[in-house]
Length: 283
Image (cartoon, rainbow, N blue to C red):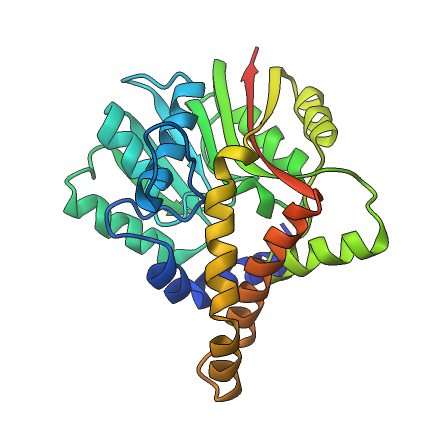
């Protein structure tokens, strides 16, 4: 990964840490991702946990699996997986403060025997070939400068028959109209995301490195309430955020994060992207 781009990702998560803490996370699940709403799920905290459940079911996770959480954030999914399934999870992220939080939370929940967290690039890890049964990436692959590099490393790390499962943002087309591309990048730039790939581009990457049974499922309908919730909060707090920035209590990264949170939903409404669950298997 380009060093400047890598630094921008770390800076983004460092400087928006309080935004996530105050407006999104709860202390139980530490989930830095959107929620999945279906039957019986009506609350924000339930939906955050439910996305983990949906991904785990699609990946057919079972006790004894070795899992890599590639882009683990504060360890929300990794800790949930170890609690629910008794699996061993290695979580990796570029962001040192996220590793510290994940390790501390793991110790508090007495999960240190099942979880491990470290600062690593998921496109270039220090693990041996065929180390994992499942590669898990929840809203993290989007930060990969080149998505094929992510898939190549995931394929190397998986055991034969191993499963890749990812939840992420997928652009609807390439190219878009100039105004549409500008709107999309108003969001992506604010969240330190270089670009998104289309469904076909994801398929091409997966096939090129050797994956089989590749699937991309559009689950925007299930995540829309969560996406709309972020847009609503960010829009309501827009003027307040501008005031805080004006007096020096919020920085350019905080401001860009808020802009991105508004523009993301506007781009969704224009059908410039959708929320997908990606899965594939190593043959």
